[in-house]
Length: 127
Image (cartoon, rainbow, N blue to C red; front, top):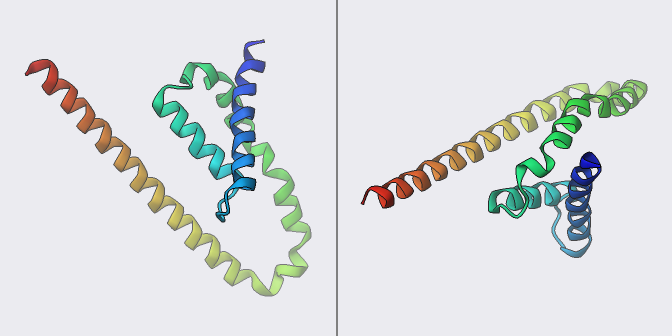
């Protein structure tokens, strides 16, 4: 029953992300809305990590299986993309680099914000 509750929370946030995609006129995928919403809910404490942690870990564990179908489709479409391999490869490299840079920047920003918050809390307790 615990896993159904945890999956229900994750599914509800994903559904809200889908609704935001339909409602908002921005070119942002529904999954991004869902991820940002989950991040905000976790950061604000509205959703506790322990409420979804086990199911989220399981979903992350099986995530490679979710890429099997797109990989097979890519292999069966080789004839179509054969003449465009270099541009596709370059797009993959560039998008990978952009994702790595943005992810690293966001992680550094969050770490700095936590350190500032901890420092302020420490100053309040000591001062």
